[in-house]
Image (cartoon, rainbow, N blue to C red; front, side, top):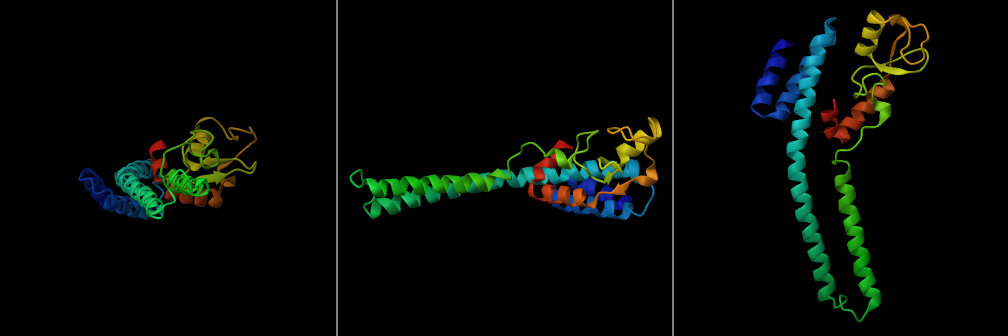
Length: 199
């Protein structure tokens, strides 16, 4: 586990983010059976998030440039098509409207294509109510509130055996992994890799 972590750090330093991500994920997988999850898992998660964000940032810049070039090529092709077919003149109002509608539709297509890759607000349902960070290991309490496991365990140890929001009595053995939220987080991060920056 330590070897994968160190190799990942070295790869990240060399800006080989894709390989660094794989090494950090291996380190996390090897850490799961262990009981020393708290500090080491947090350290690995932080560098994994950084590597994933840097990989997104690099590819995002390339995608934006390619999308802009493709958009300009499509707009030019559309204009040339209407010009060559003689439908771009001011005389035929119906075809000018067709050209305008096609330009508008083309613009919407490209706007929607880059929307998921544009940083924005992370939805509240995938964030812990205590830290406001994206869940990594969400657990649900008997009262139905979901928290980040490490943060809730720290609360139970340091503050007291009660739910931080509902104030109902709560013991560690009552916590259940919230697999639905964990899957939702994974799906969200897969589609919105920029969200790793918010952690």
